[in-house]
Amino acid sequence: MGRVVVIGSSNTDLVSRAARLPSAGETVFGTAFAVYPGGKGANQAVAARRAGAEVRFVGAIGDDAFGAARRDELAAEGIDLTYLTEIPEATSGVAQIVVDFSGENQIVVVPGSNDLVQPEQSVAAVSAGFDVLSAVLEVAFDAIRAGFIAPRTGLALLNAAPFDPRVIEILGSVDILICNESEASAILGYAVEASDVAGAATAAMQLLAFGPRTAIITIGPAGAVVADEAGVRTFPAPTVDVVDTTGAGDCFCGVLAAWLADGASLDDAVAAAVVAGSLAVTVPGAQPSMPERAAIVTAMSERGLM
Image 1 (tube, one colour):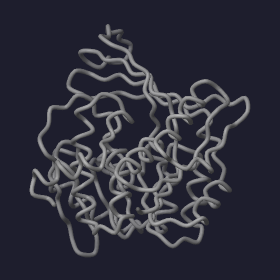
Image 2: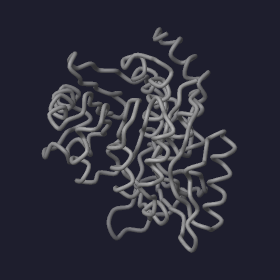
Image 3: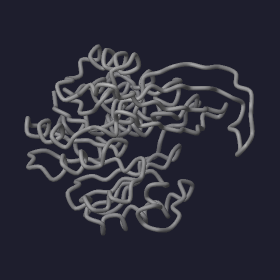
């Protein structure tokens, strides 16, 4: 069982479903409401754990009901919470999400305690040893930086979401950079379109100039493109009936980390992550949609990927 350290956010997702997403100043009626565990970091941790990894989570919650619920859920998944801190008088992170009938979403995140993750937590977790470090930018940036510049023995993955321009400062310490088209656009300074696979492949190669050894751009239903010193490869996603895209990128990152931690090649790990992401979008909610390893392996076998 590979060891994965995740530095990231824990949120409570307040999810509304509506026929379409509202435009600015518009009110639309919804059809359903639910509360789910979420946060990009916690989602990745759950995805990696269900994919078979031993997971250590670095984050912060407030001393409120939302924080207690999220902590208990992560513990129930078997995730090591030694480096998850509870901040007195802080509010836990919350994400307000609207999902339309096609599965697309709009999200507003109030970070709360996620902004209070400390560099010392990251350094301590990294110093305890790992096979893969995975992080997102939804927590205090100093905590992310500390984890990536600390001495380490394993691979370092960074999901540049949500984009923070300071991320460019640490890309030289990143082994694998993972972006969607929006984050790739922000780094490169021009629009990258998920619908343009060839353009995304070119963009992935250009991201290598910023320092990472490997760059991956996820391109929604088209899958992902990977660039490294061996060149560019495209990994198409299976066609599925999309219910909710929330957390699909987090699923990709968590499963990628778990597969790599278990000794898989980069290409095999990306193939697994793409399939896992396609499974995730068929289930509502973020963490509830993270597939078990057996389901990923079965789906890969059905597609001749095992």
